[in-house]
Image (cartoon, rainbow, N blue to C red; front, side, top):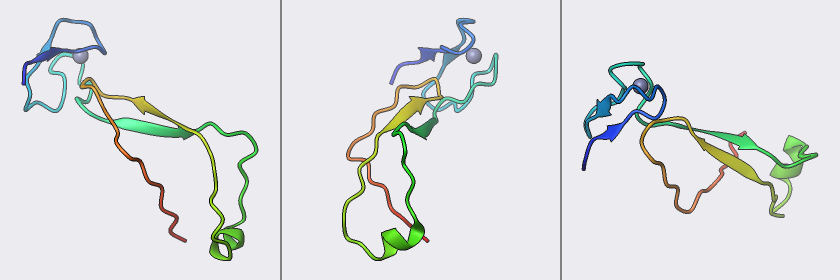
Length: 80
Ligand SMILES: [Zn+2]
């Protein structure tokens, strides 16, 4: 795997494959956050416990790291 340049600070710092942070600005090499973007998504916990009906919603995955992220077959699990 080749080194990649930090896209956070654009300093030209090259991140080696085994490095987890940019040595210039400290940005994390890998990471992501998830944001639910469905409107009016309001679910009572007891509705989840008493129903096998699927719940549909949309979410956005934001790459917060320097390295590219790919996600395959995401799954959401409810744990009361
Ligand atoms: Zn940087």
